[in-house]
Image 1: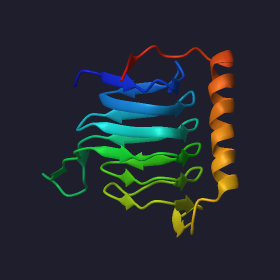
Image 2: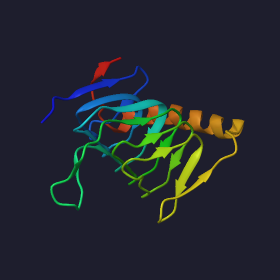
Image 3: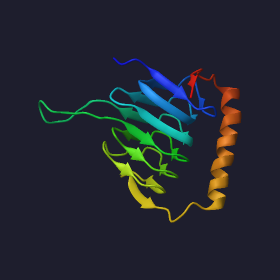
Image 4: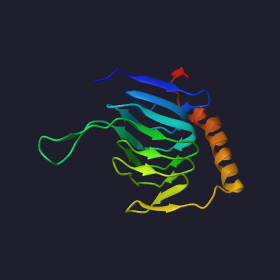
Length: 164
């Protein structure tokens, strides 16, 4: 098992009930009950993201259905200003751009690149592109982050991590 090396940005809020394992760099808000596991390669989570309850971000050696064959995952990257909604799964070497939304209970493919301003939604994890980031949308996201940074510490214990 690899040694945990977890670093957090100065404005990161990480609830105590969040499970973190491996090499992880965080600059975001993590709700309680998230699971971020990096067993093979680092996971980088950018600034001003909102990772909601029961989200799983998983980066490990995956055993595929073919006998005697392993897929080696090397790292995952999540850009800035994204929302990963409750019970969503980000798997393997997935790279998520900026201003994306991964909807509730949606999942990514193991080796997927999700471009900027993509919305993943529905029971089949459909994708669509936003044309632009509207000022009202950006302002609402910023207010949501400010609210979470104020309220989460009042009702949850926070993890104390090494700052980057």
